[in-house]
Length: 310
Ligand SMILES: NC(=O)c1ccc[n+]([C@@H]2O[C@H](COP(=O)([O-])OP(=O)(O)OC[C@H]3O[C@@H](n4cnc5c(N)ncnc54)[C@H](O)[C@@H]3O)[C@@H](O)[C@H]2O)c1
Image (cartoon, rainbow, N blue to C red):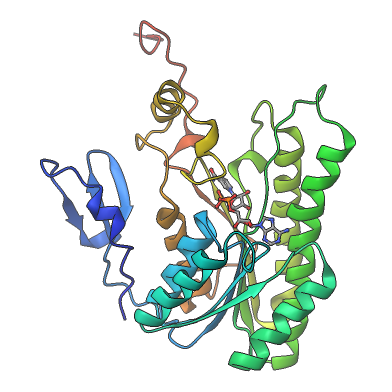
């Protein structure tokens, strides 16, 4: 089976750019931009039942679509599924159906236990089991230490930490009941690994997820349930785009060794891998997908990189 990226990625390709297909790493390299490509990797996920929270748009949407391309039964679970995101979720389900998978749309607020229970019930009713959870739904509100009020802190912990905790706990219970293991992938952030000024509560909530993943991995290992996180760097989604202007994008891209922010489907490849049997021996890991951002401590001035030790 093949994982084919959404076609829109290629429509954006300027005609004169040279595209190189590097089969060994399964991606296209284009002017310093790495794209999750039409690789021949078989993720062996056919017929797996996958819940993706927060999949009405952005990274979750791309992840749901990728699992659809891998012929999975995909539960598109979002709090705006039956509201603003209605048409969008239905269209995503249709694309999944067209690509050989099956899509199911459910409305859920992950911070409400009863709603998450209903989401799992709907999944069982339609598909009979749960094999994979991608706990992706999250929100971001800015604020430094001196600016952040308790409402800001509470809201982000309520969704990012408590919501993810409820989903993981209830899905893990279901997987244990099924007795055939499973895979849980939690979407955290590089902001939960190193400090990013101005997003104190968000970063703290994501750091909490990175440790929670390790605790869950240890606890669930005897049940053959792998638990890992993906920590994306900057990704172009409706969460970030409203704050971006041309100058800021230029600054961000200069900091990223691979030269640009990620597109959502570049995060999806990591989720497919961690959910697949190829990752059976990986648990408690935080997979950073950031174009090299965290590895880069280069300080660039207007004169360029300071020459030290020449
Ligand atoms: N975009 C980035 O640069 C970036 C970087 C690192 C990590 N992340 C993380 O990736 C995840 C997805 O981010 P995105 O950029 O696609 O965001 P987004 O805002 O575009 O999409 C988030 C989705 O989650 C849903 N959602 C939010 N709260 C929910 C709730 N309580 N219950 C159910 N659904 C809910 C929203 O309706 C939306 O569809 C988030 O956890 C985010 O923190 C994003």
